[in-house]
Length: 286
Image (cartoon, rainbow, N blue to C red):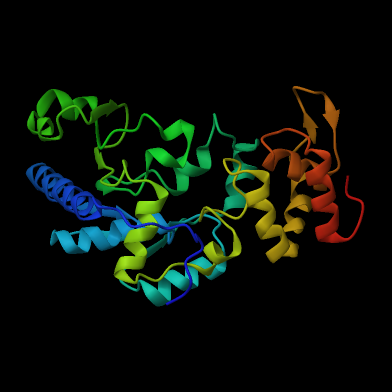
């Protein structure tokens, strides 16, 4: 068993109750999915939350499929999934991450994350995800159960989730059974059940996602530039379809500089991060 990345994991008097509640939610959700004749699909990323989620779904005894939708993840994470969770179906789109950006003609950002729509959020099944409120401020208001407005109008069974429901404009039905768990409870469950997890968590990474994600912090993205320096070649393609100007400042950058401004949410990196970027490539990029 690898050493867990968090050294301050503490026991919880209520972890058994949290587990039982999550499994109860999963079983109720499976009944709803069966009533509308759709498959239950577990969204699996290889990250800590989806690892806990998959184990809970297995314990619930329901019928399901587990799917990993590849976008631009770390090859080590993909290999980890293939080795430790061979039951997970790995799906790849015909269009690559770079090709998608080139086709759109502009870069994805937090308010226009078309990459997530294309690679991750297009299932027609009843999906179960490991999204948690403690992950970010943007997820603080997430509910246990969501359904589109048509489902709400025609199905009253969603009342089994009481006030933990919300409606959305797209998709069918979705469950977030560990939405109210915190980080400690996630790692405690992994430790308790001796579940394998990617080594990147032992390397001070807090998330498991795409290698160049505009929703992540620049610090998180720099981890992959240190690990795979050839990612900088992506900048060579940027000049093919971008004017390399940050429009809210009017400043024009080189392709390499623009790449890091984009990953810093279209802001020029601070002096601290400029030094970090320069040190990775041992040259003055900023």
